[in-house]
Structure formats: C-alpha cells, structure tokens
Amino acid sequence: MANAGDQLIREVEEDLQRERWLRLWRAWGRQAIAAVVVVAAAVAGYTGWKEFQASRLADDGHHYWQASRLAESGDAGAAIASFNALAAGGHGAYPWLAGMREAALLAEAGERDAALRRYDELAAMDGVADSWRQLSALYAAMLAVDRGEPGDVEARLLPLLGGQWRLLALELQGLHHLDTGDTEAALANFREIAGSADAPASLAGRAGELVALITGGS
Image (cartoon, rainbow, N blue to C red; front, side, top):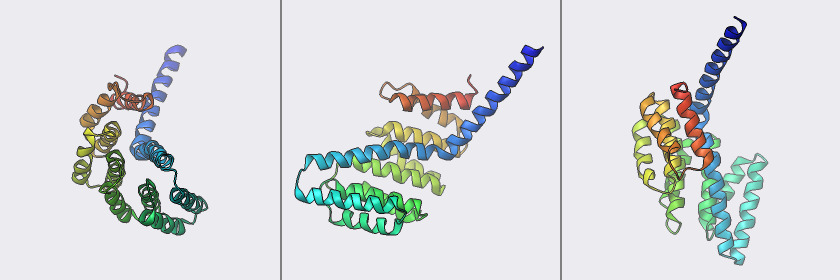
C-alpha cells in the first residue's frame, strides 16, 4: 500500500509539474526566443565590425559601447537616444544593430507601439542581409503576439516560415497557438521542430518537452 501511495504522489507531482511548465512557457516563451535571437544579433553586429576594419567603424563601436553602458546603468532614455543617433549615422552593421537595441529598450519601457514601428523599419532596411531583416520581423511578430491581434501575428509569421529563422518562427507560432487555445496547431508546430534534422539540440529539446507537456507524456 505504501508503494502504491508513493506512486500516486509521484504521478500527482508530475502532473502538477507539467501544468507549471506549460504555464511558464505560455507566459515566458517569447522571452526564451528573444534570449536566443539577441545572441544572433550581437554576433551579426560583431561580424560586421570585423569585416570592415576602418576608423569610422571603430568610432561606431565605441558609440555602441557607450550606449550599452547607459542601458546597463538604467538610463533607458539616454540609451534610446544614443542608439537612435547611431542608427541614423552609423556605418556597416551598426545602424541595424543599434536600431535593434533601441527597439528592445522601447519595448522594455512599455512603448510597444514605438518598438513595433522600429522593428518594422528595420525589417525593411536597405543595405543589410535578408536574414537580419527577417530577424527584425521576428521580433516584431513577438510584439504583435503581446498586442493580442491573432490575424496580424499570422500575417507576420507566415513569410518567416520559409526563411533562415524558420524554426524560431515555428516555435513562436506554436506559443501563439497555445495562447489562443489552438492546441492541435501548437502540437503540429512543436512536433515539426522536434522532428527537424536542422533544429539545434536546445530548440528540439524545448519542442519535445512542450509536446510531452501538452499531451501529458502520451
């Protein structure tokens, strides 16, 4: 009897853990994606700097560093203004990268409409790689999810499903489907990611865990 009771307790605890994880993913899944893509953005900016070893790029790098210090110190207003200036007058990769940081700070400050407009501008920016524009569009889609406009979200995500950030777009689409209660569509998203040979181990693992959480491990 004791063993049966222990087993029941473990099963209840596992069920509660699944519910907690699912709630966390619904609430914080977008931030998980942001944590991944912001690294890609930083690498892209660094690569741009390495590719163009010129004094003006070095100056832009210093400007970017100073703006980052302002953000880290909590002076969001000054940091936004500094990133905006670099986005307007920088060279190489810095206008795009500074614009991304500016938009992120606007979103953190609660100015989501302004942030969304900034991401949309970056998604249409000339002179940068298409993959970078798509990354800006992915951030815009994340903000659109927060605005609770399902039609707008789908319209933003569909063009990304055939690009470099396809798997991250699928993950965001799956989380959006969870938010709107379309569990079957969410499962299709996560199963596609989990079964993709191109998915990084961390992304495939998250997708597989979400499938297990939604289905109760069945």
